[in-house]
Image (tube, rainbow, N blue to C red; front, side, top):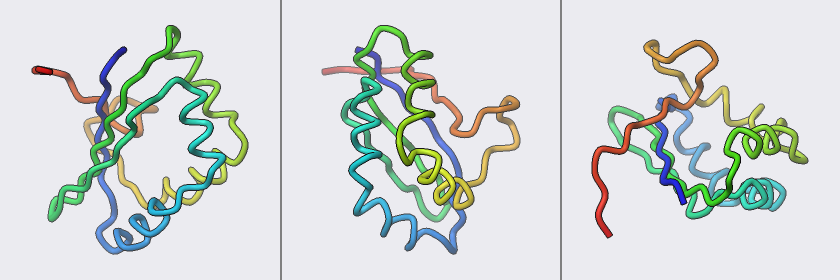
Amino acid sequence: MQRMCHVVKVKPEIIPEYNRIHAAVWPEILKAIHDSNIRNYTIFLKEPENFLVAYWEYVGTDYAADMEKIKHAPRMKEWWAITDPMQEVFASNKPGVWWAPLENVFHTD
C-alpha cells in the first residue's frame, strides 16, 4: 500500500458549491475510485489559503495504469468538467500536473 497526498488551490467564491457537490459524490465516481485501487480517499480544505489537500492509499500494483483507467470511467470527464474550473493549479507545477504531489517526510502507525 502506498500513501499519497496532493494539493491544489480552490477558488474561494466556489467553496460552498465545492463542499455541496462533495457531500453527495455520484456513485459512478465512487466506483471509479474504488476500481482504480484507491482507498481512504479524503479531501481536506485549508482556509483562508484555500488549499485542497487530497490523501489516499493506493493498493494496486500499477499506479499509471489505474490512473489511466480512472480517466475513462463512466461520468469521470463530466465530474472533472464540474470540479476542475473550481480549482487553480500552482504556478510551480510541472506542465500537465493539476494536483501537485506532496512528499511524504514522516509516518507512524
